[in-house]
Length: 137
Image (cartoon, rainbow, N blue to C red; front, side, top):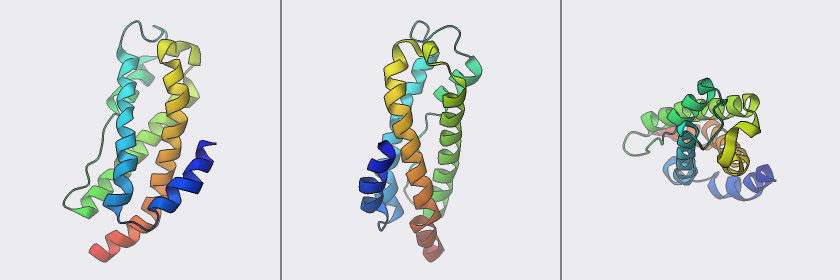
């Protein structure tokens, strides 16, 4: 369902916009990745949650800023998006939901939404953003 929302509502709203306008709201949503810090807080998640998954999830909570140099900004968005998507995919594939403790509900709602947002960012970066960067360079 989240994928359809992205396809029907998000993509049409951003596909013809400049990178700063299109990517800023998607990257702001990515600010919710600070929720990954919960995985480092004792008592909120199971002690059996592997630190090899919890630490990268928590430390991957970064927002790339779109300001002056569009080529550099788009490169940083690529780096951020690749790392964040890989992090979510690894987390989803290797974490037992029972290990998430009180953060279970948040992960069940936020992780699928974040995956959709990252896919939309990839699609945008492969199309409209690439044309904008080429025109700017």
